[in-house]
Image (spheres, rainbow, N blue to C red):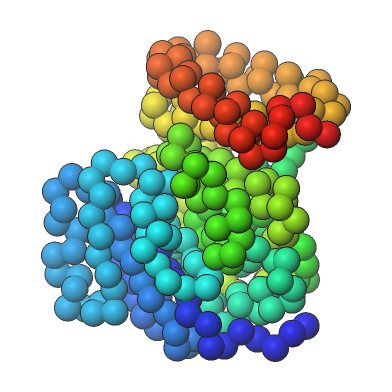
Length: 320
């Protein structure tokens, strides 16, 4: 392993639409890092622009930016664009970092210049349940967090390569983000919430960047606070607690990710699994949440853009 990167500037981008104790705990954990070179950007997506009231005095190192009504992806793009760090840590506002998080996570980037993203061991707030130990691509063409919902018994203590990193705590090399940027966007603005992390990981894989897991970099995440409106926090089968619009976005973004990134041969190979998954997914919607269909159809225009982005990036839709 190469020498730990101890002198590089790290940019932290936090997206939030509300002032809460969780946000303050997140900022406190950034403030308490034992890594010396950190800049912080808080992207306020609230309509009132009152998120920064009372925060500036406690966190003078933080730059507050307003972007009313912006989606999560749009807000992240804004923060990355104005940041200066060689490495960029994208955080949900319901995440708390261990004090040595940045110092430990940088060891992943030091392994190789081809490491474009580093995953931490992300635990729930009970400090016993695993939230994510890296992202993988399933045979259903879905994003799967390694270890999701399992008790931490030391089964993920070995560092190594992973397909990608979960979006709640996503650490990226700027060079990779610049290489995979498409139509001026690091994260695809058509996504909003969900699957943006898998899309980035998949695009990175096409550019020969890899993900790496460092178990000594530890963070804590309150799963579901942002998208489930206080319901279903840390509970399984999360889509049960999504409102209809977010549920439609979850389905839409999976399709966008596949359209933009999947190889034709692999798509055909996995088609039976994809078909089965969709039968179950849409069956649940038709039986229990029919309003989702309307939201899904109203956003169907983004599929045409996804095919265009695929063609622009790969040269042809029918690549091997």
